[in-house]
Image 1 (cartoon, one colour):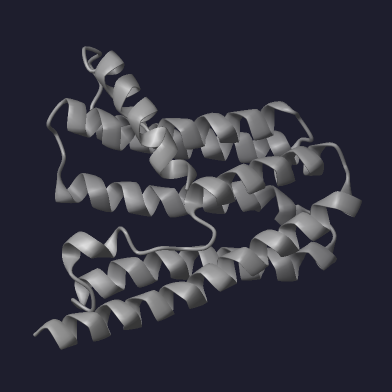
Image 2: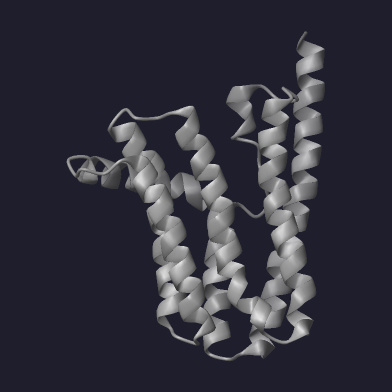
Length: 199
């Protein structure tokens, strides 16, 4: 998917910004602040909102690259990154909550699917339903990078006041997030069954 295509580019950027006096966790927290600012600007119907959200997502993608470049990877950094990822997604959906109620069902389903997909991976790892090395690589049908691009387009449609395109897009993203969650349950079950056969 897109994440694997972007990883080498992110690694190069990580090496480029390595000399700067930045800790990877600074980038993680900055992504949340940018997402909050983007949400407020989008709510104000400013085109800067979606653009700042896209910047928040880009910054969030660099914290891991910088951590690897500076040899500062840590369990806490991984935890903080995962928590802040959910906050960035929450802020990307926040402007839509102040719109007509007919958007609410798709937003709730989208957020539920997104959060439960992330939680399923973490809990499968925590409960050792899947080997630690395989947990992060479990496949999903609508990965976070693709979902973020969809949310960026949705925010653009929101600030342009185009509910005729916005509502179908939100339902597509909602369906994709739920299908990702269900597919992940199947992938975890298969991985667990495979491990039992090998033992």
